[in-house]
Length: 360
Image 1 (cartoon, rainbow, N blue to C red):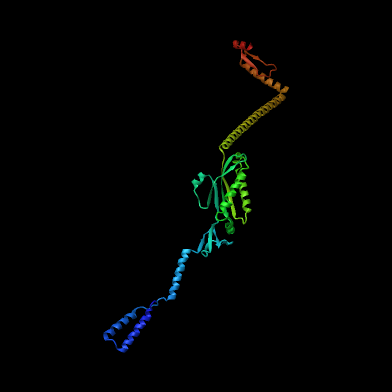
Image 2: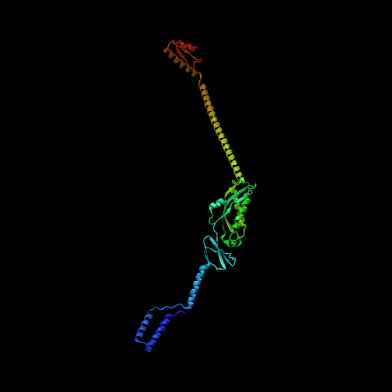
């Protein structure tokens, strides 16, 4: 039993007073008792907790310990929603970010990531090189048979996220491994159907068309699911690995196409050069014709201007020059052209040898 110190002191005080009244103690004993009483009086008084109060304290301590051991609460982070399950039944309302309490053993809360996730379908070498990123689901590249039965490997990346409002229904229907049931098998089937309808040599040139068809068919599949559990963000067709024979064939076709383009370019350039030369020759011919026409018009104008009075005047002028020459050299011989209109030539008669050669 806990001892009440105040009650003990009151009992001591009462015994001391009784001894004083009875006179049954000596002075020394009285002085000692008095000193003891004074010492007891100096001790501060306090109340020891009773049995009920201690019980409450023990209960509180036990509850605190159980609180940390059982942890009957869950913290939902940003980018997540919580799904509360009570005795196996899923609550239809998703829990928003924050702290949420539940009854251990009866209830539990599952945090579900609603951020954008990526499902990659890549080769084993690329998967080893990249490692595993948070929010990324790695899968093997998709092997497809083209329209002629040739094996083709397709690599792509799918970006998607859970619909936050339908997360409880999605987890209840598809389970926590919903990606392996909704994303992976559906993408593989759609890629095989779409790519398999094209011949392998056309795949590189129709890359955008193929990616658009895969995106369209995947959206149609998701829209057809109950509660539309997934929101598709995008699909990127990253790589199409063709057989070696098809690669070589495509390279030969590309080389031939480049040669044809080069030949077409050479022909076009030669044609342009020929047209340029023809235009230049035509310009020269036109210039010659124009010059000849101008000369002919000048000759016609000159011939039209040569009338009889003018010719007589010119003859008089020439005769005047001859007369002046005869005055300077009286022995000169004069030769006139028919009509007397051309320039006249005269020579000194003393130069017989030169005159003889001219005469011949």
